[in-house]
Image 1 (tube, rainbow, N blue to C red):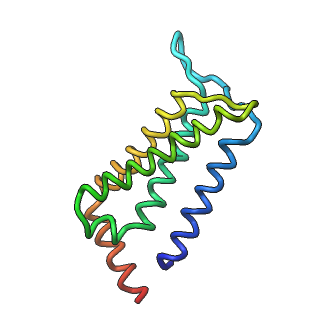
Image 2: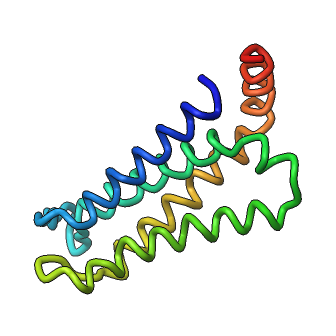
Image 3: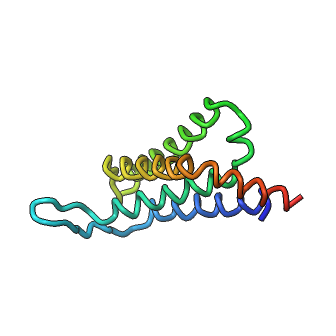
Length: 136
């Protein structure tokens, strides 16, 4: 899969997240144990943005890790900004509402995806390097 295909998957995923952000439904099912309950959709937010981060890293792999750390921070900031905007747009949609906890779950998902990547960085770089070199 070349960079163009990875970009296609990333932008398709972005479109799906935007559509889900404006869709007229509620996922406020609660789970938990004695005295501690939380909404199940926070897990959906976390995993959705974990997936977004992984797709973004795969798409921008070469440019992210051949440049300085500051560039990586900028890219992560862009993902967090997108997360905030998907919540903020719900302020203008009558059947949706802004929820700071959703934004926090999105951000945790972004940092979890980044953390997983950094933990497995050496293995991913080695495998991706072999894969990217075989595409040429």
